[in-house]
Length: 156
Image 1 (cartoon, rainbow, N blue to C red):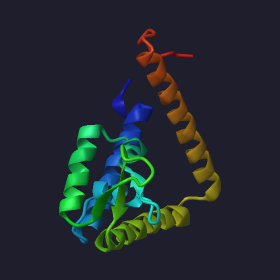
Image 2 (image 1 turned 180 degrees about the vertical axis):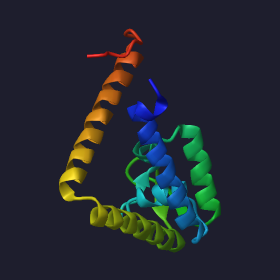
Image 3 (image 1 turned 180 degrees about the horizontal axis):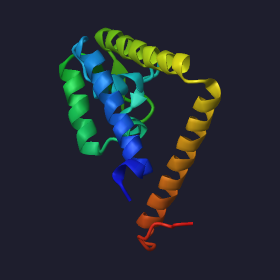
């Protein structure tokens, strides 16, 4: 099978194009796409437990630790021990972090508005349904692999 005929090729190709676009946009504000995503996933009022951020973004713990350290050094976030449970650390945005978050948010909104203007709603609904189904299938397969079941992908 040629790579251009595989589903994963098109998903990865599309994501890389979007990633490059977001990084070019974010660079104007001295951030990266990854920083923007982290900032967008921190609750403005309540903060967000550090342990919840990684799974939201699909980041490995080591990468997340590095990212949070970088964001703290840049003055975009602050860490506070949770008032109810001292074992947890909550991440809060600083004023600068909120400003950068708003810039990232604007970029996401602009991109989504552009998509909605150029792609008919019925096609977009089908695309989103297909992506949800693909994600469900991948999650099921990952669970099966972790459970030690055969690594052969189902073909039916």
